[in-house]
Image 1 (cartoon, rainbow, N blue to C red):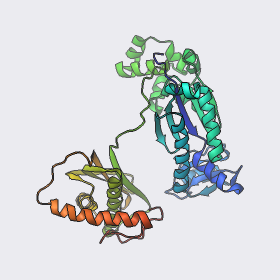
Image 2 (cartoon, rainbow, N blue to C red):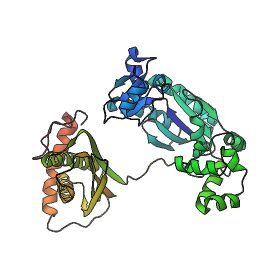
Image 3 (cartoon, helix red, strand yellow):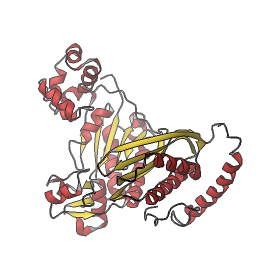
Amino acid sequence: MTSSRTIIHADMDAFYAAIEQRDRPELRGKPVIVGGDGPRSVVSTCSYEARKFGVHSAMPGTRARKLCPDGIFVPPRMDAYTKTSRIIQDIFHHYTPLVEPLSLDEAFLDVTGSFRMFSDGETIARAIKSDVLRDTELTISVGVAPCKYVAKVASDLDKPDGLVMVEADSVLAFLAPLSISRLWGAGKETQARLGTLGFKSIGDIQERSLDELQRMLGDASGLHFYNMSRGDDDRPVVSSRDAKSVSQESTFGTDLTDETECHNILIKQSDQVGRRLRKAGLLGRTIRIKVRDGDFNTLTRQCGVPPTDNDFVIRQAALQLFDAVWNGRTGIRLLGVGVGNLASQSQPVQDDLFSKADNEKDGKVLDAIDHIRDRYGGGSTRHGGSYLRDSDPDE
């Protein structure tokens, strides 16, 4: 190991399901599955009681029902999950500013610079676990190690409510007995290939030289797995990242076959994306759509525009892109709108001379609508022709 850092990987235990069991005591100790059990539904997560039956996240709901006939399916409550996540993130930031969220329930923390105030990594990890339990009534599993990769592996080994410490001088011994499935970057196909070469454990890879691995796996893969098998991972904890795109997409329980209905969805999504851009102080130069049909064929299309956060510009581009691919014959399973190639509103941009006045007029309208929505909710108002369908309850 070349690093002297102390990295924590903190991962909530069955987060969504645990919140449902916390808020509904009658669900405690029972197999709770967050998501639907219909043909188009997937499992978001499930309680440990359901996992005993083989249920796991991203599994089709129908499959989960077969594996766990007595499973209790509950719809996701993203507002509740997000609210709890904010509490957890505040706890993380109490101990270090170097927090890299991976999702609502998972983050890396670099606590190397926190020792003087909070003592060592194990003490900080135990304090985080105690604070999370106190403030949310939920458990969290934590791995502490000299790098991100080893910390993440460690946090997963003693769930739920685990704490696994890996000191710098014990990384090789810690990794050696673990399956190659624990290698970062080793998907199922790579695992099968490694297996045919005689690699069953990470220790098997540790026994090979870099030259041997590169001859067997190629230069890039050989170097990667040589480093991973030794816990040599210098990736920093990134406390904030510039957004690469802002997008909104929806999957439908029944395929859409009406062009007007598709237009209404795209218009609504364009409005949502535009509002998120304005809230983030961002402008985008590329408009994209994503379309998936009932046979799971997916295509994307995009076009360039002057830097914008304008709903009207986004929707016009999205509709034109959709009309260019719509054939009227195949049902639509998924639609999405995204804006990429982002820049801060504070950066100077080149205005279109002929559209500047229209943009200023649109901006005043959109500012007024944003103000009303902020005060009264997302479905309280919309500009003309926004969409014909009712608002989603989570707007």
